[in-house]
Amino acid sequence: MALTRIQKAARIAGQQLAGRQTPFIFNEWYIAALSKEVSRELMARTILGKSLLFYRKLDGTAVALSNRCGHRSFPLQHSTLDGDTVVCGYHGMRYNDQGEVVEVPSQASCGGISIRHYPLVEMGPVIWVWMGEPELADVTKIPAMPMLEDGWVTSEEYMDLKANYVYLHENLLDLTHLSFLHANTFGTPDYAKADFDVKITDDRMWLKRYVVPTRLPPVWAKPTGLEGKDAARITTSDFVSPALHIVHAEFYDISLDESERPDQRIKTAHIPTPATATETHYFVVHGRNFALEDNSVTEFMHQQLMAAFQEDVVGLQQQEQLMAQEEGEEYFEISVKSDAASVAMRRYIKRRADAERGLIASSSAVQTTATQQPQPA
Ligand code: FES
Ligand SMILES: [Fe+2]
Image (tube, rainbow, N blue to C red):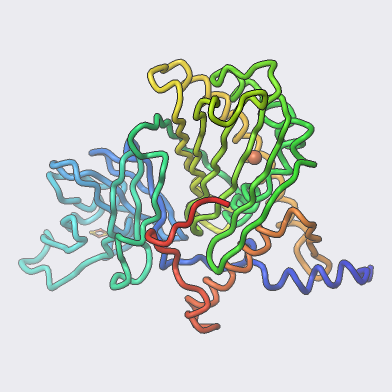
């Protein structure tokens, strides 16, 4: 069946947007694991389509190597950790923490054999990894996570999302979906029609929503003491990098003057690390700056939030399955006003991916730097 004029235009516009077919961006810092996941047990995790091996040295330093033995491709996760070295479980080649072979059991010399070593940087509850060209690894470009600053309480989680990472970024940049996908958890009916501002730069996108007045859902109403009150819920969705999205939100009683309002904010890092084209490691680090001493608030918020984020996981997986089935000549996506930030984000990811493959000049797709982080809109 022929596409309508609008459908055809949407199909053409969609060719400039990143999607499930877009190659990964390698020259970027990604979160590989939560700190608590990496231990003295060998652990394998696929990141950007590469299988990596993780462990901790005796002094606690986290290490990442290729998980593929350089000899005959045995998965090193099924090997032995001996001190700070890994002894391959197939023919016994021994690797140090830099991926260099230091022993070949069947011969006297090692002949300079090595596998790839990946730089890691551990920051509080998360471990960042550099998957790109080794000479471009620059720790000053790791984006800041403001909820890890003093005076904030955090909790973290890992979810296995069977969908492409681009659509998780998109989900986060348009919170219209709170009224529908999250109707039974932290969405409210007024969310979808609330006013919003969009701010777009070359490499960063924000969407700020003003839900005022509103009644807060339990996850925010209980810990802030705003149950049953007319409140403001102001949320900024902030695309920081292809590896990090931060949601900033503030809540207050609208009957109070600005000077009387307690400072009650949350910041949630949503961290999509691509595993494959159809699977994403979805890490969350959630922080708040109030009720700091109350562990029951941490547990309550964590449980409520993760129940809501599971709705995203289920929805994005359902979307992924249908896209996989339907893609082809008649595939199109129609964008609306509230998609402005997410369309800009998908154009940016596409430009970055094209630049890495040399398809466009790299000057139009520079990496976000930690020193250039403006405040949310
Ligand atoms: S496959 Fe690892 S030593 Fe042979
Ligand atoms: Fe959501």
